[in-house]
Image (tube, rainbow, N blue to C red; front, side, top):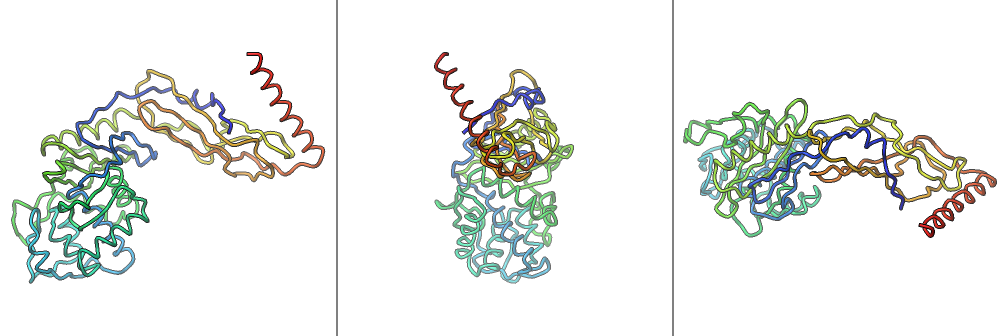
Length: 384
């Protein structure tokens, strides 16, 4: 394994760490979707009671059914006595209602309707128990390793658990995979059939602040405390976050706004290397050339702290020498950039050009050259 210092990148990354962010949340995950950068990880993989935030997984299951053509937005679902009996936040549905899929989406997103979740679960899987099994199966395929589901609504249950990381990843999926439906999360009210006018408003405290917020879901139970999964867009950058364990609605609102402001104000998006920029060279074994350039295959954009105090470090890591033949564009190495205050950024590096296998003399010359380098390195180490 070879580790090379990358001075080119360090010259381009003239930025230093952001102000430390200390959230009052018990657990938090903040992610910049535009640059694929995790900005904050505080107990982000801890399996916690998600309350109504787990309704995002129910919505995901429903959006998938819509995309696959298994249901339509105008399709009506029956309401069971079990759905009607649900407590907490509801749409106030009864057995005579036949809400459409679109109304149920709004009922879940805006009103946080527990009854609407049961209606969706029964409509898609027959029973809520079978729907929960399908949720667990889908969670595994989506890589939600910190999540287990016992129901569709987030109603308190020992087996209803999600991490902030998993909640953030579900939010990212809803934004990225279902743009045609994501707009429902920005609705501020839904007066379903005029029932319970006081319950028609979206509980997301960020939607009225003019900071680019357009989703997603709040949650609260006595066990979980107050939490929110949110997202906002400013100047083309999208941030997704999930926080939980706060003590009140007010603290949740304040902390959510702090997270958004910190994510956008303390970091700047910067192109640090254009496509094809050579970052380093790697040794080649038994090729027509003894070296191959390592380049970025796409424009390298990173999210960097906006304040400058300390230098960053960057290394190129690969297993070498790399045996020929090598194809142009073949992934050969990894650029690791350590940015103080946020997790390490990892970028693939590819071959700048093809390197065919060498003939006998070329291979012999290469072998002697590499062996000579190793001997010289060992002598230098012994003398130091």
